[in-house]
Length: 73
Image (cartoon, rainbow, N blue to C red):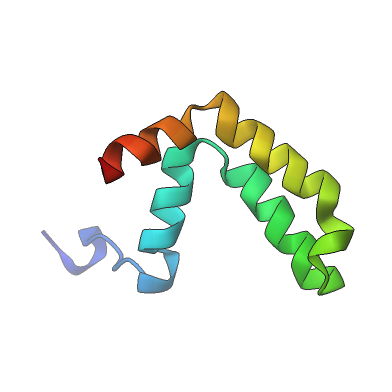
C-alpha cells in the first residue's frame, strides 16, 4: 500500500463515548439530546417539562424500564 492509499487515522474525538453508546441503545438519543440542550440553555429542569415528558414517553415506549429492571435482577 503506497503512502497515498493509506486510510486516514480516525480522530478519537469522533468516536462515541460509552455514555453516547448507552443512550443510542435506548432508542431515545434524540429525546435525550433535546432534554440536555434545554437544561443547558435554561439551567432549570422545571423549564424543560415538555422535553422531559417526551423522553419519559420514549423510554416507556421502547421498554427501557423493563430492560433496566431485568439487568438489576
